[in-house]
Amino acid sequence: MFKNIHHGAAAWLSAMAIAGPAAASPLAPFVLHTPGAVEIKFSGYMARSGDSNGTGMRETSFGAGYMTNIHELGNPANQLWRSGQDNQSISFMMYGIADAAVRPIAGSPAHQVLGTGCTHSAFGCDGKIHLDFYLDKLTGGTNPGFGIGGIKASQRQGFERLGGITDGALLMRWEFVPGLAATGSGATPVTMVQQLSGVASPSSGFGSYLARCAGGPACAYFSNGMQQAGADFYGTNTMSSIMALTAIGQNGWSARLSDPVIAQVTLDQPPAIALLPLGAAMLLVLLRRRQRG
Image (cartoon, rainbow, N blue to C red; front, side, top):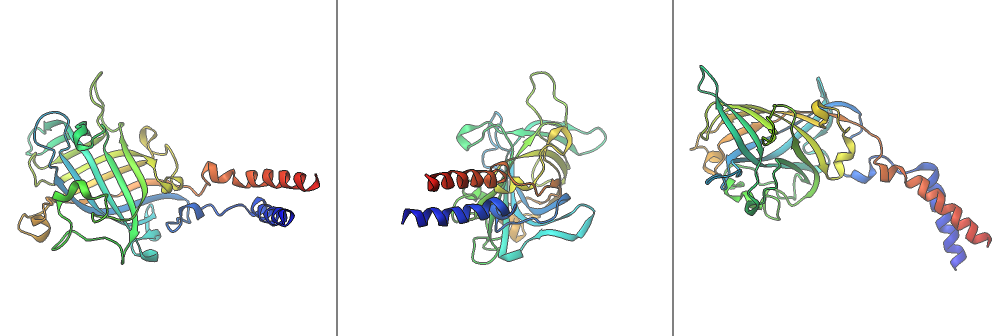
């Protein structure tokens, strides 16, 4: 009996050693097939945080929404992924944004807002701005939307739990990193730069950030350090005010958020996966030695 098991295992391992695993299989059902520079498109809404009152580096705002597509940079027709593909939906949550400095812009009602990660630990802050993506089902999943009957901004701390914006699995987690704005010696690193029409909500404007992929299986698809300051992603925000009397405004959302992000897709196998054929070959040798013995 043991001999038959060894022969079966040897045959399986031999096949694995020759063919090796498909590069994308560990990330299924989310699969990107084409390497190169891409633009990641997603949109959603922003709101003032319930933690923004008081002093210290508290969370001033956060956002949530859905990824719409990933396409070749400069060629929107060549889509690597789109919402609804294989019944997939990808939701996101951006959180931990604290205002490190607010500076008036001379001759304009606008303000430059330099953001960094909040540090109020009781609210779950860890000093970083995060952008998390979750893979869910378009139909049959949570995906409540933001209008009438949709998710409310007041549900901020429940977005990642069952019944929140997603009940799916973490796809990737980004952390914003410095590089777009200079900081003085000993100053809190700036990881998000915005120019807003006002300092009170609702306001409109734009912003930019750099980020690195800090966790999740989809990180294996994106090249490391391809952007400015060694970041993996370069994102730009566009924010437009929402009237409080609209259905979305009544749910507590004050601005619409649109975020194209530039990144580089690679189809290289993750190191642990790439080594699997070699490991399988070594196991095959050991099994054969054991059979001869």
